[in-house]
Image (cartoon, rainbow, N blue to C red; front, top):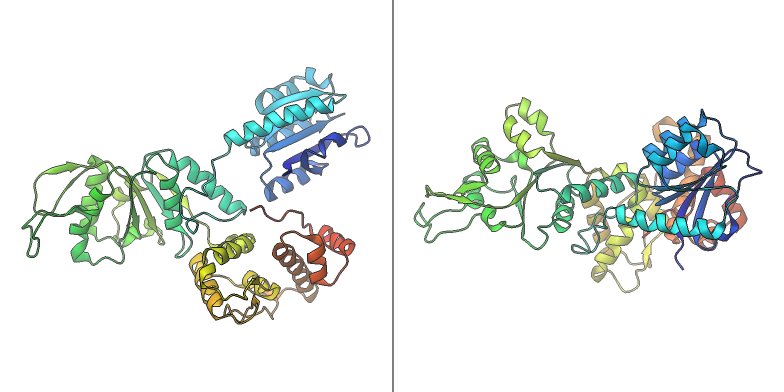
Length: 449
């Protein structure tokens, strides 16, 4: 049975407070005993349900609790209080504003478990529906880092609107994947998704390709042709690298965004087109406006719903999930003996800065899957080097601590959170590995797939 995640926050007299043992069989409980630990736990994992156990807390304590619950409104909180605390105005306000439900001491485990189950179901309803499964298997926003979870949450909200979206991100970071996710999760999902690379299209052809043309509009125009904007009717038009669009075309695009109509080349008739525009750029368009390369009024039209795609170096904790994902996606390219990635390869990937972002990761993995001659992909197969120098001049003792933490992290990831296997790979006992995990603040599971 898959256990549901529950964060139990205990504040007050520890001898009087405890999470009922009856909940252990139903919930994967992470227990903390102060607000700082609660904030850290919530930063590391998105808990759908939180259990707040309070006793002998003062009115001053409610300020910190209120701040915690305010910052984590996606978690459905259930409180357990002494009956007399419920009479205090500050705690009554806390219950009304932030809690899904509350109980009083002593706890009735069966009733509390029932309430927590309802809270979990309510959290599932409020959570942004998963983006996976709406598109191709290699077109998903893969990862469990805070950065990618935030992007998925924003994408889910943006998808429900119809206003223009402007996506910024470094080259190769996944801007088109984000645009696909928005389209696939929107009410336009059954309509076309037309992608246009504004930087790759010759300037002389952009006008006719985007807006279409009438028969005889120019030499070679033997028949009328629908432009890419018309082809996207009822769906989504994705304008990649919008910053490379020539200024004269920016004027026409602005008119289309304002009026919802286009005029084909060689025609004087306006055509109404229902299409949602998503634009993307690796450059900061505000800087392009200052330099005179981009129209300020067009930027305002496009930048209604801005999104930022994080660089891969900002979410390295997703590397294990990404490598596993792309290993499966491109499995047809691998040799029959190849089974995965070595621990050395994972360490090398974790040390690499990934200037080419996810696109670079895909290219290195695909090349390694073809060229590798062993059972496991090595750093050499990926054309990466093992780190041999200290990071930013760190002290030797700090480097050793970092190396130990990275080795534990990689072994846990590569073993699928199997403690016995990870301990065997590290050459230590299970108990030693548990102590090392506690020393470095590493909790299980590292990720969920």
